[in-house]
Length: 310
Image (cartoon, rainbow, N blue to C red; front, side, top):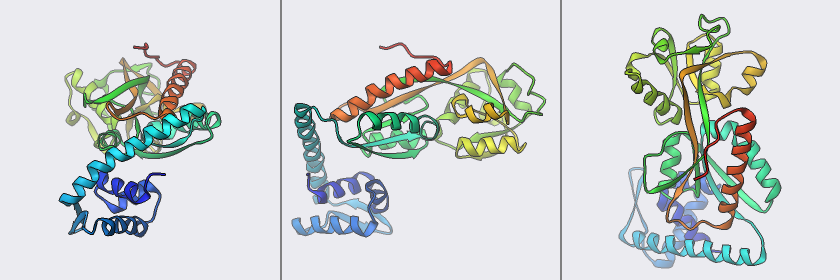
């Protein structure tokens, strides 16, 4: 095993937070602090400056971090090469997923993956799209799954499937009998939107711009941080909203909400995101192939668009 102290230090240095590192590593904060202190004792120097609840790397810390990055990457390559020789697929995967994907698509996908590859351990971080992309950029996670365009050209982005965004209204709403709606129809209604940084919100904002509108044209009465809270607010009559059709299977089956397509149809990609130059150990490769086929099959069954393979 790679030196645990080095692994813990490397995680703290990536996120510059003992608390966040403890959450990522599933350790207590005192345990993380202890491991870093042990490494500092080995080098007989401080690796972090700690001031006003903020930490930064010292000059020695930056040197250790650069070497740790390379050492841990080489360890992963060594481990993967040996596992390939034995035919085993195992190891630890650090995944991140935006909220809609984590709540509605990943549970069944990961359950199916674990059934086929039981020796792979998966740790999942959930956040909005901006948060997950930032985790990939900062090497906190091996692979991100997000629901909006990723502007960073230095990242490798592969579309898994396309998803339709629809307007949801209470069943007794004046729009409930409409087959389609225009973006301009939203101006007249109390509107519930996702929080800043959400992929869903970014897609809606782009769609508004394409028809000559802006977010300020909407009568936003509430901003909420998850599809579940938005659906609950719509059911309660607070307003209308735009959400992913893939999040509505339960509500449509129970007939507790009405979903209406937009004209033109509003779609967005679900994508895998990873660093271009980062070593990809075998478990990640197997997961990406598995996820691609799983998503394509599920998209066909659900009647969603399937991307062409590049």
